[in-house]
Length: 78
Image (cartoon, rainbow, N blue to C red; front, side):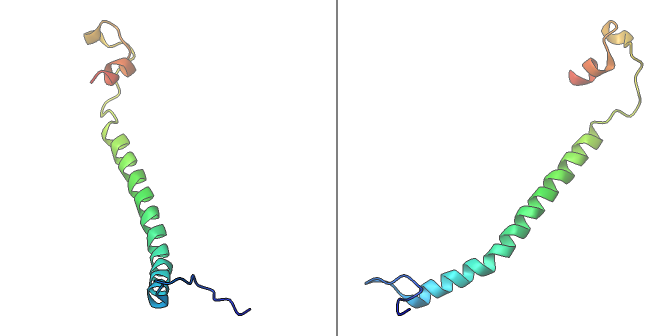
C-alpha cells in the first residue's frame, strides 16, 4: 500500500508525468472523433466518386462504335 502509483526514478518529475497523463486523457476523445470524421469523409468521397462516374445515358448493349463491345467494357477503357 505504501508504493507510489506513478513511476519513480532519479530524474523523474511527478508534475510532468501528471501533465502528460492528463493530456493523453484529454486527447483520446479528440483522436476518436478525428478517426470517425476521417471515415465519414472517405465514405462521402467514395459516394461522390461513384456518382461522378455514373453514366448520364444508358447505352444499348451493343455499341456500334466499338464493334459490338458491351457498354461495360467501353466505359472501363475511358
